[in-house]
Image (cartoon, rainbow, N blue to C red; front, side, top):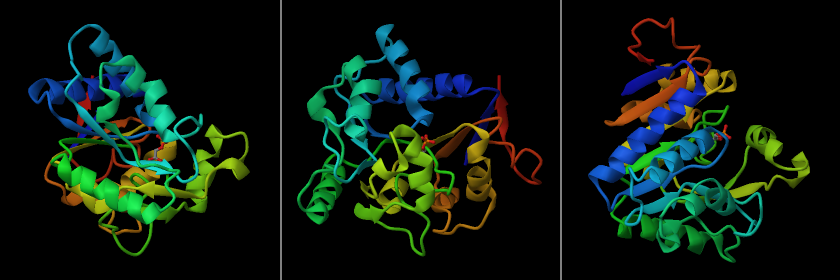
Length: 253
Ligand code: PGA
């Protein structure tokens, strides 16, 4: 477990983008596990900039996204498929056929989850997984509950998540109530994981994830057991761990 703390979200994003580019440069056929939400947007912008400078080539890369809202199509402005196109895919040379996101419009969500699980296995698993963290400690849409879901599944979003994500919609009522998400177990199998967190709204979740017990009530806490995980935090998100005894972190300037 490595913890890197940055003085700003911008510096965090620049560093995260370099790590992603380095992974692709080392392994051109890398499988990237990608995340949506506000947190990775700056990282994707920095990655696009690196790509435009010709310093990374995504032509052979496969991407597998964490989750999608149920009921939203690729065209829907709020769908994660659309988010990825707008915030990354349309600006880099990744082949659209190599990008994968659960189908939120699937008639049979269970079959769609099985398809997604099989896809991850077929691609050989995830080399580098990018994660955000919810204010409630969720990773992807694995909400706090009494077990760690192993595989892709249909999930009822928690009230806290609906509230947190309402900012992307016209009103809270428009936020989908369900999503298809990769399971915590599949995330855990990624060879390397980068968890990005900025803003003080994440401080409590980050503190629980790093210092609390490993429990599905804080899904991100499972990462304490992963052998190759880096938390990239801005100083606000890190505020709860700075003074904690026995925590080793590195400040990156
Ligand atoms: P955010 O979401 O980046 O929009 O804060 C993170 C998450 O819910 O995992």
